[in-house]
Image (tube, rainbow, N blue to C red; front, side):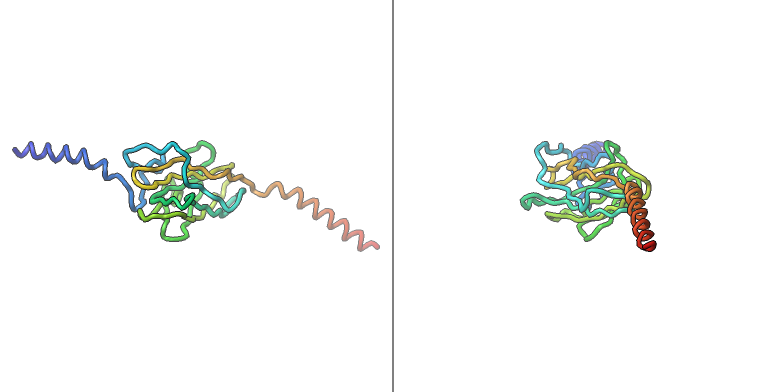
Length: 191
């Protein structure tokens, strides 16, 4: 009789444990590689009612970019994860900083490489800051997974491309300005 009770417990655990894989506290580090929530459902294929907006179109080493996840037409959401990626490279780039208590930092390969929700409270907008790495990088985009309500979610919500610009193209122009200014000053001194 004792073994049949154990069998029932094992069967019930097998049925109910997958159903508890939601992350209302946003600690979704298990989803870092795929950005897919463990909701035992598939992502929506319709256009997402959410957008990722950036404060700029270019960045350089250690630049700070404001990243805002916004719901369209006040469509609320409960959960999210945001990362920055270059091309199809799955490794997140840079680090995030939070601006309020709706977001928290996640360690995905490195500290603060992603940001996610802190609770399942309804939200229409979340703002975070992204700090670019020191090393030269390439153009990139931000990606988000947004959970409207369990099990409804959208993946691969992409921002517009953020173009890398280290400022090196400004050096020749600056040199021309300095040479031109020196010529003008030299000419004025000779008069």
